[in-house]
Length: 354
Image (cartoon, rainbow, N blue to C red; front, side, top):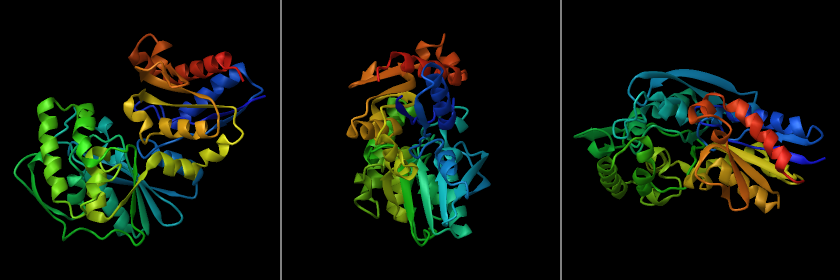
């Protein structure tokens, strides 16, 4: 009998982390029913962060608010109030890419996440965790700062149009401050080149954003903020919160992994399965897949990665299993991800020697 830990992230736009973990476990048990399987849904500050924290903190209260979406229209977003007076905010809820009908890398605004932070501050919480990931924005967090009381002078749209930021009217952060859970280690200046194309930017728009970010970084009230790993998260929102609200930037996957106790499960495990919607070069730099894999290797535990799509056949010694290889098309794999995750779990159970 083997002990298996299943710790995936959500498959963005397709299946939640909890459902992904349960499907993989069901598939594994269909082949090896005698094994002990521990399902541990994970997050890194992006989509699904609130659900993962709520799963281990059922004493928390979920609040629902109407805020400004990334395209300027109203959206309903939730935030979590923990029993120790901590607010947990997930940027994807207010400013996520799926909330856009058409990507707009220049015009999309982070205002909604700023509104959620303002609501939590006015609610009287003592500390705030802001999960940055899955955003539609590359506005350097300027929209969020404006929602928090900063006066922004503009002569155009988005970050390229920002002339100056007057932070004198900003709300004060809560007594124990703000921590940013970043899903990347990218610094501020890298954000346009890395993330703007994912949000639809062409080469001219990337160049305009790079120039704007360079200017904003030069005038940052905290000179080191633009060099902090994770300051490029959510299109530069990590930089904005660190520069103007004194937020501490931490690696979201590590922070949440410690909260969930994934390291303890590795001690004694025989095999580990992790995964996400799309595996790319950023997956091992601050995201769930990279963190879980690093922890497992530190404990000498082998494993595998299950993803929706990937250009990789393996990540070093860890095989990569793609749902698109089970389905007839990418669309089919996305629409019926749970079914194919079960198949992937069963296939791993059949082909893994333990």
